[in-house]
Amino acid sequence: MKYISSPPVMQGEPSIYMLIGALQSALWFFALPPICKPIWPLIFNQFTPQKSEMLLWLAVVPYFVMYVVFVALPPYLLNWDFFEQFKISKGPWPWQDERLEVREMFWNKLVRRSLVTSSMNLLVYLPLYAYMKIILLPSRALSFSVDDWPTHWESLIHIVSSVIVHEFSFYWMHRLMHHPVLYKHHKVHHEYKQNMILSAQHFNPIDFTLSIAGPIILTSILIRPHSFTQFQFGLCLFTTNLDDHLGYAFPWSPVRWYPGAASTDAHECHHSVNIGMYGHKLTIWDWAFATDIVYQRWRDKQLQTAKM
Image (cartoon, rainbow, N blue to C red; front, side, top):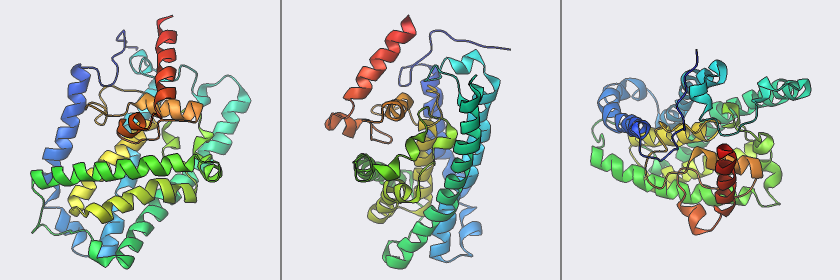
């Protein structure tokens, strides 16, 4: 059975979908604290600060699995018109391509490599860097106590501060990885010309260290939020990363509804033309340094093609 809504609603366009996205963000911000507060000491009181921070970042692994199962797989498998109207690239998915060599390269090369690189990045490197942060900078350890559990206002200040620091550092590290000297490391990520969920953490170790883990750890060091606020911010970061590589510009995304948010197709453009749109969550730095020009032209062309 197929469903369709035409014309499709764009991300950032006022609609009921935008409201759904905003409500998801509100649940993260208001509903998670009372749920997590009684659980926090049960999980973390038995560990050292180093192991607690490692465990905190390992939480992205079950979240990644949940996102794949409940967000990515339904549109990939069902092929409903309702979902397909939001697909950014109009070409077939590699597993649906009529060419046998394309399908074989996808399953035998990309998928296998992505499973290995993603597992190493999320299960080994990221928690390892969190552990090293506490060893080298014990004064910047996060608090896991409920005695100083953050208020909504404190969480808001720290999340906004973290967004500012992370966005600036990510933009420049990502842009730096496109420099000819370093691009040999970043080109692994660009093996995916058409984004799909497995490309989200498809980085070689050097690229992951510099452009992914580096800005996260730096933000944690400079802002030093409570561990729960770090958890909320991590949800935002990882959701944006997964959403960037989903291949669909769903207008109900919880990370695309607010003013200044980068749209999912901006990263699709980045992968397809391999230049510009180096930001993560926001468009501010691409706009400030004119690295959004290629994207504006690309999007105009996409819109013109869609009208034909």
